[in-house]
Image 1 (cartoon, rainbow, N blue to C red):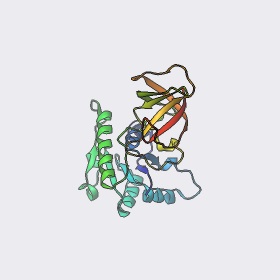
Image 2: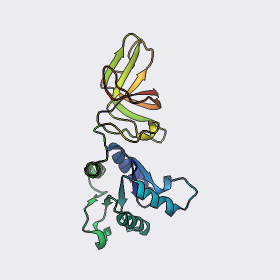
Image 3: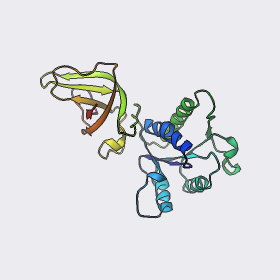
Length: 236
């Protein structure tokens, strides 16, 4: 089992927006990486890649709105492989009787604040399932990368290494695992710090919101002022 969530869903502009704005952040918030079939690049048959991804995933997220035949086929494979599946739909009638006895998350895309409600319910459900499976998660939110590779975070603490003149800024979240040089999971008390090397004055203050792009991530180490920290090189 690997540290990603395989997402089974239809491919269309409206679903792509839900995937990018709701599903990806919710999955990353519990310390997993999202994966859809359209992001698998290999020379094997697509169905072989899908089956392998279902087998390897920590869990499965299935968007069954519209009764898409490919979605139900892949969902059937996931159930046959006895994988944990979180089912989501905007239409209760799209949940067939064969698996209507299973719990699912229902959302109303026309309701007030429906996106925030769906994100909250999905994140809570994913955390519950991962806890039951004993899959390591993080208590800190995982930062979402935009299309340009930038992310946004608040500065919650500053450490100044006086003798060397470095400033370290603790973020209120963690970089995605994909940016950490092959890391498979987070530690429960892990923290990430932007590093300003050899700077005479601080660039940020506690409470500042910073949009940045990580250019490198150091190894996980314990320092005198904090355990299990990663130093992050960055550009603004």
